[in-house]
Image 1 (cartoon, one colour):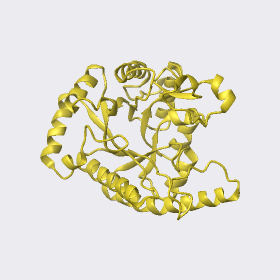
Image 2 (cartoon, rainbow, N blue to C red):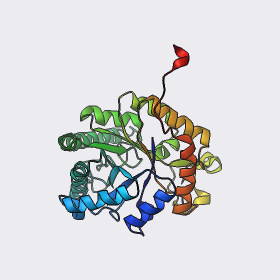
Image 3 (cartoon, helix red, strand yellow):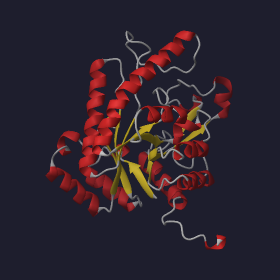
Length: 322
């Protein structure tokens, strides 16, 4: 397994400087944003797509710092009811898949997207209950839209032999493991999860059970190492569907936290062990979104915990069982 970093928090410095810093703290891999919400500070698609010289320079820079690329990131909403926004997101995603193929990168991380609740609506609508019945109807409509779009996108990914790793994210159509499997079943095996446990913790989902569920279907294509802390004093009063601003930390039911500040090291060792049990031996890509500390401190503390948690070697023979 490798410890990696999504480099977005280091976007104020050049890729060369970011790689030098990450190399110095023991990071093995990077996930590079190339569009959508992550931006493209370190990998502008227009600069690298179809340009073999630029791609060779990128590879030389990665080799200099002993880095691999675990994934390209372009999180956006290709199912947005506003046609222009959906088209932009679709272009970003399709071009990211092409670029990943050219760079010999296995996966592109993204969101499933979220449609409106009906063909005449203008705003994406996250449905969380089947009643009143128009909500159930809206949810059915959304899955029809998603299945149509993702069926074609999955064919594009298969053509380039690149996995599409969808982050299960509330306010998107796919936000939990069974929805992830539903979309995968409706498309192909190139569609799977960018398994980010931070969004599952606050929903009350057992992360290791979710890893087993998706792992049984070989549906984990990438992994985000990000923690969440639920603050019971707030959650007891208003639950976890919390619209309080992320920067109003004392009044939120939960916060994204650096690795080890939501769940202890033993839990993360259990996560790593479960990933290995289901056959995932790839990168744990740290995504820093902890508003209580700086990016560098958050990254360094996360690397410190994961360094002790990840397995660096392949399993040996179980001689004691012979």
